[in-house]
Image (tube, rainbow, N blue to C red; front, side, top):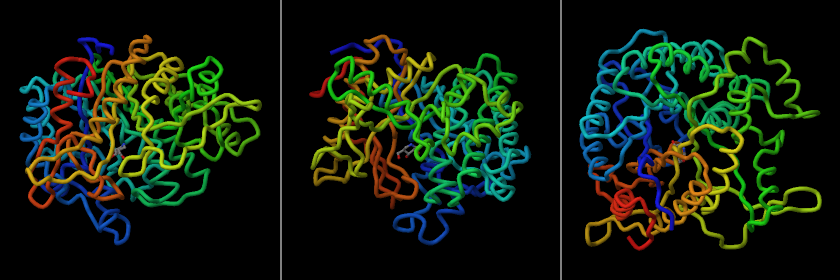
Length: 452
Ligand code: IFM
């Protein structure tokens, strides 16, 4: 089994609305997720982020646990609404002071902060002015990003502009299962996508203007394929299937986000209903969008096995009883080998796995501990696959486990636990799971050993 390079950045990840709680405290503004979780029927069990893991007050404990885990980096997000409640550039000093504490505690613990500036909690004030349907939101986000970089210059070096814009566009503005809960038609959905790509471009430029030493990325998610068996034909079929355009499923792809940003053009889509929309993108918009980042974040949970067929790639149907996580997501470790390689070949930028992990039905056992062999097995498989991608020469520089602690899994509520650390939500007590100890040993040795 391969040894990961010494420079490899091992980390864990979280997001503001999922962990912090107390979003309105100290002058914070409401976000679309507060509105959404407080709308009856939107979230499983009627859960809200009002308290979440209470990381707003318990951040020092979380960072002490990160130190115990031995990670080199912590990827967390900042709540735009806590800092800039009206999304108009009027900063809330107390909101900003919270992130000063988080950043300074990380630095004092020897942990590098990787700051995500937008992980879905749009200020409600911005939504009231049109949210991502409006170009104004892109400019407001650019302003926010510049201000953040100016403030954190010298302390934060690594930024991600947006987390998974694919989910915002699809789940939030098309399917309506995430905030703001809209079910828009394609032209409007497409403009939400354009405005987020513009937001990335404006933010990246603003961060660089404020801090030329900053390293800026975007965290992307989407369809990925891997070869059923590793023949050259199947590998090529998996590559083609990964980047094929299906006009009905374009949002959950990496290329509809990353091609315009990095390559400066949209994927080919002749004769589809996307073509006229692409043609309407103005030169001015495209000039803002085409803004390659310094690095890429990939949020990868599963993929599809593919083989070659007479008429092109064939998706292999899942067999009855195939392995699944508690959220019923397929367990497909090879996606962390081949999916990553395909992405790296296409975009040629340093990459990080900014999210990977699984939900388990974790609970406290009679011995008072949380045993999660499923998570250990999953990690051993996925990280072995990742080690093969690194060994093949793919420029992957780090891995952030999703998530540090159990947290609010958006519309699924608190029932789905992704953490290395169990959170007893009624009391806020943190209990490191068995996987926490396993991951700590892996970080120390740099080698994947299922029997750790
Ligand atoms: O919890 C989410 C995270 O906020 C974004 N990526 C996927 C995770 C698991 O669903």
